[in-house]
Image (cartoon, helix red, strand yellow):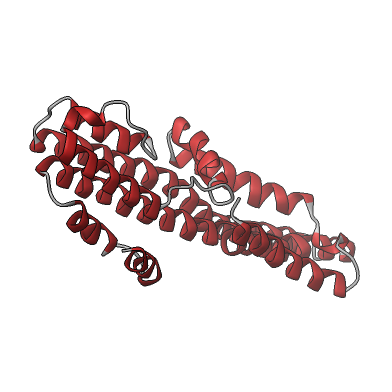
Length: 254
């Protein structure tokens, strides 16, 4: 679990709820009509924007903010160097059945063992990488739709509340509830967009960027294995893509 995501979400919501409680109770901040307009309206507007499989799938993608797939670049590089040394000593067939950190790595290594030429192997792996980018982009597009549409639904709710209020100015008792709908919908839209979904989108984009670099490094490493390059040179090439602290770890171990 990503502790930062969980603590950040709880902390942000806690600060808002605390400010509400400081004014008395949560009762004045709960309005059924406002919830229906903002949450229900945004839900169906996002569904309208995307295909059904993408819409349903983006809920699982949001869960990755809290349970991200664990792929450590350092472990992958270490394993790649080990396999490069093995292939250089015993040939490509020695890689058959060897353990790999993930499916993408395993697929590329199997292409090596099967004797696929470099153009075919790299082309197939890069095509899979591009397909992953498109898939992630579709899911992130749905998350972004929540950011765009929730404030818009809040504004629609505000207009609805104002129309109700202005239409019943003769009844003082109706002014308060109508004004509550007008103001609460804007607040709900702002909270949904800026507290829930905007940080989520940023985190998902960061995970995608990391996955892209990870897979590009796998392609680079397998190219070196196929060419019979020195494991040490391969390690230096792949380590150059890591953060400075991670590079220091490899330099210290060398």
